[in-house]
Image: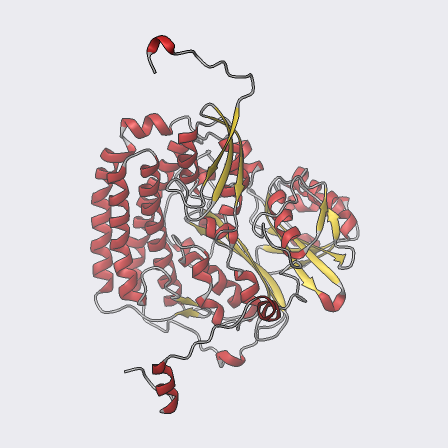
Length: 380
Length: 178
């Protein structure tokens, strides 16, 4: 068009478009969809649309034996599967009155913190990619793989480990494992300044993330926000300290917080949690070196294993927040009801719908990744 | 558990509301059984007077043998370590209850989830449209009387899978694939 022929379009006062994000979109974590109503590039309304990863876990678990469900639970959350195993196992132990051996408790804490490292490194990478910093994405995924190598050596699987079982863990450490873990922790730690230069102190990221997706502490509490997202609003609350399980009372760690409540604060809390997880793992390693004993309590014949009737609600601090299982037994060899409360069922639905309003289109992906929303947890 | 062992803020609540049966389940869990019509009052009192700001989850359990649904409201506090689980029973035939969205915003998600999985209508809940089972036409699938295998048999056909290697393996009486 020649410039002299150009006529500016007179937009009507209300000029809304519908924009569909996902279910296959690089700016969406997993298979999940968002339906946005936009005016210009500002989002006026955001609606979450889930169900693409619904595999009916809760129904399937009612049809399987207590022991068979170990194979199902890690699949509920791909980036951070170990807390799923731990929470299910602890629920069965609570109902069945099983006593977990001390060495198994330390082994469980070790894999839980390793899983937190992998999940946070994955999120560093994913979050960076949403603002165009792709190098950081490759770094995050590569460093996560370093820990996955250790998982593979320990459990035989890189992602769905099925390592934690009711009553303990599945196998003991291979020879020399703790030395290799220690070396990998040193490696991750010395990588962190590089992540700072490339990502956390990067002017592009700081400019995009500060002041984006802001929620106050009051809003976070009202919306049921938990985990790093809540700590980024200034509340120091962590189930490892405030509803303790395993041996977390015997290790020293800080609970990092930030006050701004924006995307940048949430990223900084995760970065600080990586440091704390390394610190916890460094306390676990000497304990495991000097602790012998069984790794599992004796279990009855798993095919005829019944759990006494009752119900329990068990919570774990996963990398994404408060993960809980409500398990009901009617005294038979299968669970009567298992309800999985994933932290993302808040973060990916109501919280995201609130924070999306008023945001610009290009920030929607960043807000979702900064909340570390995990759609398979929502869909189950 | 005697009342003396209750955390102090909970005293104020249980002095206020009568007809509550409570039982300790482990060191940091308290089970409360209450009539369905008084649950919203209990939640409001727990939130306002005892600092139970966090609705962790609402779980639904189907008890067809009692013709009832059990709804469990899991409540947490940022001040005490004791979680409260408030249990109510509602008739299965009516499948209706009140929304507590005005007390706890997270209830919106859980009520919507229970509505599509169990078919319970929550009056006053902001959004009862399907979230996960958007194209689902069948009965609420998490109900105990929903027959998973029967549904599959009715709607899908079994794939004929009979490769040569499997026939050879079966002829040998099983074993490893070479």
